[in-house]
Image 1 (cartoon, rainbow, N blue to C red):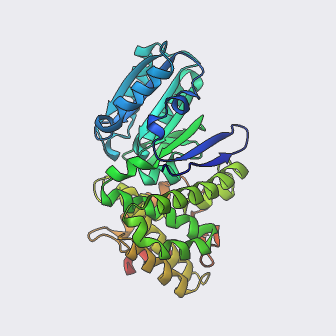
Image 2: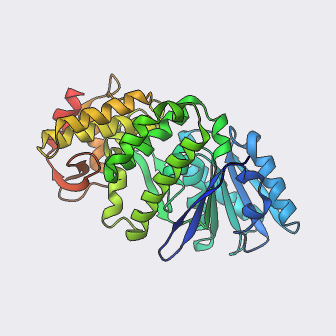
Length: 364
């Protein structure tokens, strides 16, 4: 018996639907439904493309025999999320002769989704993009909300644009091929939603930790749908991150600094965010905003999910702080962090003293 699909509607000026369930990549009608023209570019990486690109392309051609479909494949990994990789995707759109009604299909994890979405945002000032995330992290975070970008050596996601997708298709069956480390990385972003807006969700995750780590289909679908619903609600209220949407960056100021300092070759994004959330909770405690017990509870849940919670050895606190000064969340008046007053109650805090941040980093 096939598990029922779940849907989450994202409203606002550019509404779209997130569909969650097994077998979506085999559903020709669902895949082709967002197409408005006769041209499509499938963007993937060399880890995901051999597994799923052929099936997706075949289903699209079956549903739309007149479709001109080309594929652009990147080397897997964060190191491909660069202006050079973006240029390759743009060149592929140019070779396709893509018109304004063309569509980009982003088949992969967060790197592919961010880069393909950014290419779609820039080609002819914006063509359609369908996100087909293949990692848990992408399903619950980067594929939803329309934030697209590439990295620079100076920091993550510094060049990008807001470009909402036309649809998000999260095929939970592909998670069976996801390496355990990548599954755990995605769970870090799932935990984030409990931390910022839904404390009872943390209890649910604690109760279902073993099922989630064992790829239980029902548990994963529920976690994805609940996470997407929280993100959709926030994005609908604040599509361009002028206020509340910044809460989705809980743990990311620390996490991005770690990733940048490691040259995107150490902790992956989810792992860095896990450490970052522990540090953000500790910063909140140091500033007198939150009880230590909530931070310990968050730390224990992340440990149970197999995620790192301590700063990697060899990282210099001053260098990490320098990366934070360049972070998109920093302002002219000083550092801006997402902190919390306890589980499920996050807030934006400006002008955070650098001395407090250094103390937290050195203690970690």
